[in-house]
Length: 283
Image 1 (cartoon, rainbow, N blue to C red):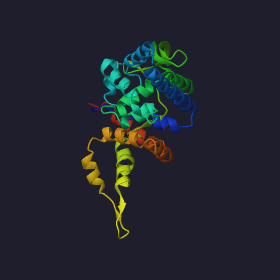
Image 2: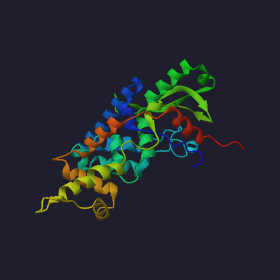
Image 3: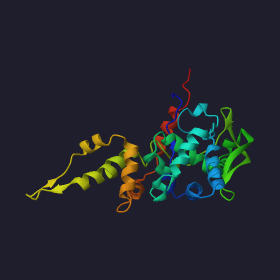
């Protein structure tokens, strides 16, 4: 992973950005995920078959150079395995109870779903917007357009609610096309992370539930370490406790509000430093 730049597109960052590209992306990500949930919960076999196909035909976007092993990405598919895992998750009671409502909520609950996969999904669904951004930057900075190619790019069509391809002129760097991403979209770790959610919401709910007042008027509070020892599978417990508490408290929405209030875009110097880490070392 020496060539990994350790930057990832994050749905929560996009949710909080105010640039026109981010506003468009936020709306597109929301409609994509909401539509998939509707297809998953449909009584129609044709709808469910179509929804699963959408996930299985999604390909990793090698044009972005984000995440792990960026130099080796070749647009591989999510395929039957991972597509099926995500499709199953959309049928979870968490979706039916409207706790899990956004792409960036998935890593809170699903094993094997982390920042790299979420970055791939986010950039693939918003690829048409990223192409527009890149082409705007090419006009603003002509040096970006010095070497370009025109190739078919896989894009999401929100009107058809399906994948399509479009011939796009983009910079050609390192043997493949390059798509630029607004700095405000990227982070080095998920803004909505399963561990803080576990620490501050789901295990906290158990601690609050089991806290009592002694006859002497003192609080008898269980230790958090003991609660964690009793519930070591973080994502599984996050899902179970979130679902249990939905009638009295939506932990996901509270955590999302916390994340939104604390959001600060990635600093330019930090972004530059992480990008430089991904460049090949001089020999």
